[in-house]
Length: 380
Image 1 (tube, rainbow, N blue to C red):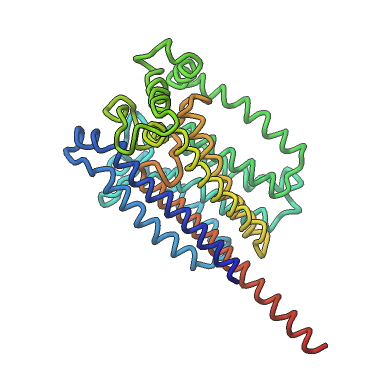
Image 2 (spheres, rainbow, N blue to C red):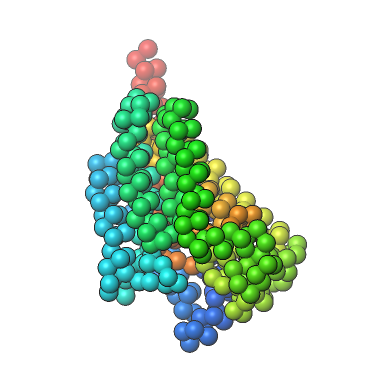
């Protein structure tokens, strides 16, 4: 019992460390731009604290909420997610920023439905695959998950958001593989999906420009390559131990989206290589603990659900690192728990709450086994 409770405390503690550090870094990365654009240097910090507050409530709620009910409501979750994704295109509700319609505004609060879609897919896939693990050996058995994932991808790419679309595609492939999809079907879907990526890039001129900037950012230092160059300057300035908390120079309107997608660049500048490695160690420890939750889950649904949450956190963290270091072309994926964005923080913390409930129920199963064993010994 103590071991299980200790694991839950570690998971919750690591998440709280990440979100608290995230609030500090959001303020550090944004106070100048917030003062410049909104006349309030705490603008992004206040929004982040509100997101963390709602996230804590969501984490506690789902930690107490029987995760098996998610299986019962999987179609409702999918339907509501699709409605939210559709609302971004409704004038007066959808909010456009930098040519993309990715947010909806309700009663003064902004919501990014694509962040919800990733976890909605995990819930649906885990539910269907856990109930039909024999059927997934056939193409027909895979169709429900593929159709649901495909409809979510279509809605997200129309916003447009290629990065989140690819994230949803990665999550789908991962869930199908752990759900029992055959090697033949894995290759059947992976190869065309990989070929579809260049097509999406060439269909949109701005994506092609980003790709060219990734290959040689110094070819357009004031254009598409500007953001990556500034990110590299920021990381390079940090050295081993950083220039000190709140002392970043790149956040003074040099680095675009310093508080959101490129916040890791500011972190690297202020706390250096050592501090960044420590932050990555916290992420690694969290993903490791979530994988342990999946391995010890009391049923297939819980195992797949926890695996999906761990996968999203791990992959999105790696993709964000790759973007800010120039290892892959720029995408708009935030660093989980850290980047500015109330919806992202709240949804990720809700996912942690689900994993805590899976952990709780696996512990209860363990207690039942111990009690049954003791009873058996007495009778013998």
